[in-house]
Length: 143
Image 1 (cartoon, rainbow, N blue to C red):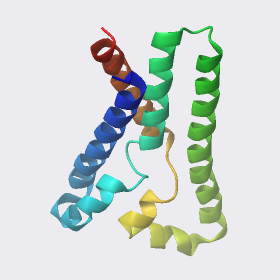
Image 2 (cartoon, rainbow, N blue to C red):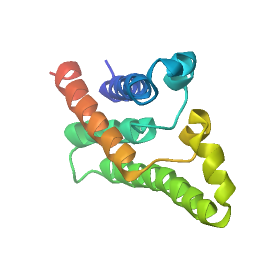
Image 3 (cartoon, rainbow, N blue to C red):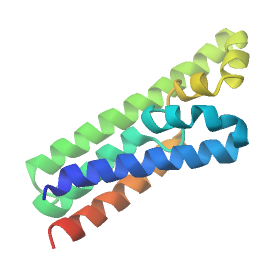
């Protein structure tokens, strides 16, 4: 079995499932109509992007080693994806300062709130999920 694909799928499923739980905790039962939306959509807590790239990087590190070119490429790819998602949130924060009405629009709509990128805590939660999923996939698929 391909540990890389299994870890990516596992980390994505774990992150998306955590989004449903976080949505229910944060918004209560009024979020039930958006539950399916949270399962398939990217954005929110935790970052599925960060989870997938970090799990892939973990599998490559465990199988090819830290000195391999493939691991270096995976790290570079991970940093680009994570940086891109965090910059989107930073751009949104700048728009908030320039257009205060935008803040009210986003605050009142959970879907718009998920579209504005990721906070650092959301990214870190995704990385932790991804590293765990990569570790599990390597030990169960290869061993």
